[in-house]
Length: 370
Image (spheres, rainbow, N blue to C red):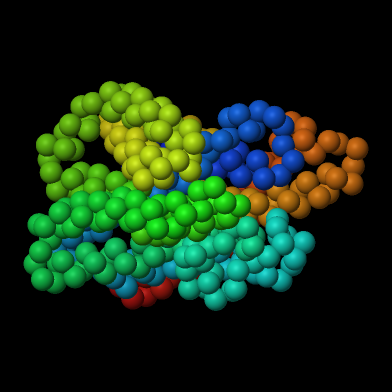
């Protein structure tokens, strides 16, 4: 994953943007300055950007491997994913279950849901909201498991050429399931006290209703690796793609102004994902300012993004608990800066204490097997 990201410098900017959006969005659940509500209300879209990035980066590697070798090395792929994802996740999970003071809310779902990466299915945010942000990681882990297996299946039966049709069907399937979920589960509760809980449980969190971002990233990678005209088009129109993507993102924000409306629930995630898909295409274009501009800040924040995503709610909670014992106001900008700085420092600790050692073990195993 890192070798691909280093080639496309623009993706570091987008990953840094995604974690920034998520941090500001989730900071709203704690004491915060007023501007956080104003500028953070669309921060949930950062997760959709992460989905598009993951879909592109992971599937591009696999498609490149297919084109080079005619097959994919599942053992190598799963080894890389395991040592990249699981060690920081296990540490964060241990903090939540072993140290109650780390929990930003009261109740955790059962630990088996986290271990099996199924916590996002039927997630009751209002009764089991602690470490709720692991829902997106669950979707990504399910993707890391099922996508290579699906790709191997199509390769085994020599049906790789129809794989793109399979992707289109899945895309439509996700939209249709959101409409069905809306009609069956949300409409009966639209005026009830249970509305938000049901909406999150049936529309926002399930894997089958949130495939748009991953599939957008996969589609970009598929054509980038298999259609020369597509690659040329991207490389020739980078800045235009970015402008169109930003314009469409603005339209998506208009659609999602009321995030739980019928239109936003059914088509909002699709519009957001396509918007970010265009911006990702810009970021990998040789003619784009995103591709050409290099920033060490973006590189570092992108590198910390996973660890920061895992730990940020617990760290903000702890930081504000300490600040509460001082004369500093929890709603102040200074508290915000201290809390976010604590998140970044934690990301740094995770990098050197957990992620780097895990990467060394991974490399040792891969080198031994080869």
